[in-house]
Length: 110
Image 1 (spheres, rainbow, N blue to C red):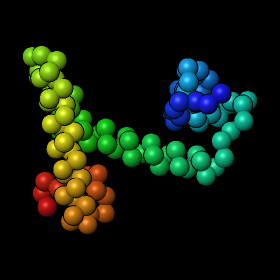
Image 2: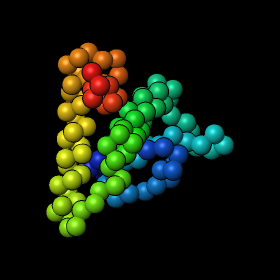
Image 3: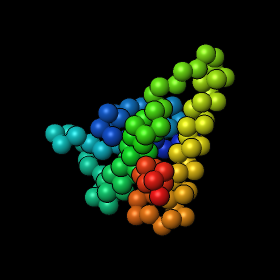
């Protein structure tokens, strides 16, 4: 049976069974199930670090957790604006050839 999507997660996703979704998760150290190959583990850790950094930047620098919207449409608009401002800062860092383009505070203070 072909799966519609692949979900990559951490140890919390071990044993999770979702319909039409293949889950790839890092096993716990005390797990009896077979472990993933080391190169795949490194790739997952690299991707996770990028995602965690992005969420951290959105929350800390752009206050994504504090959205004072009065309607659902206003909420969607404000979240979109915060994500857009993050992407613009990443692009500015890319143009300025910064080492870590995800650190948006460097885009603000050139």
